[in-house]
Length: 289
Image (cartoon, rainbow, N blue to C red; front, side, top):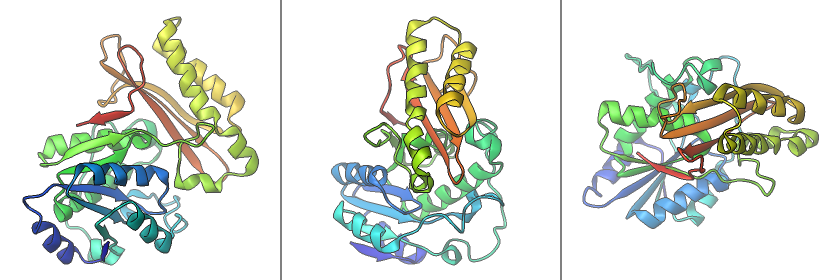
């Protein structure tokens, strides 16, 4: 595995593979099994695998945890090598943003709900850095986790609207034994919070069961899931939503796919989770855009 910290060098390298497939896994580091599952899939499906590690300041708000975001470069390099990454793109903030940007990218659809409602500008930062990374790496396929389903939907719209020649694969959320979604922020939970955090996935399962039973309308189902979380999560419920996916518009009986999404704030961490369902309310663990 070669570690690359220069945009110019990364572009030179990827240009040499113009007749081969490049699988790309963009991350913010502090790798866990979720990231590694994406890299393993990229390894199985492509000639070359590139992973990036970059904590993107543009997607953090003023009161968010950019400086405290967990980082462990040595661990990340070791794990990336173990799963077969060929090139680890590890740029500094100064390399990615050497000066103030002279333009702004702005997402206007699908960002005033879910995480976007409480994080204005977050997805503008996401589409900016992903656009830069796509231009630098020139991937054939880019891999994302469905845990961040709103992000996957936003990137789907980015690729569609701007005609990026890249396929997006959104893969299954990797979970702990009790169902909690793997996340770099899980380490911030107290023991009591960690014990209660499995209520997020239990709430999603409740929502799926209620949809299958057709015993209530969408608004009632959402309310029941929210009450369940409020009573069991040991945190503050940020949102519970039931929407069409990937448009993130209001769900209806004609929606081909749905998302049940939840977010809960704990003392030092905010956790998100979701289920993507087809129109028979079966869970989808993989999407390709």
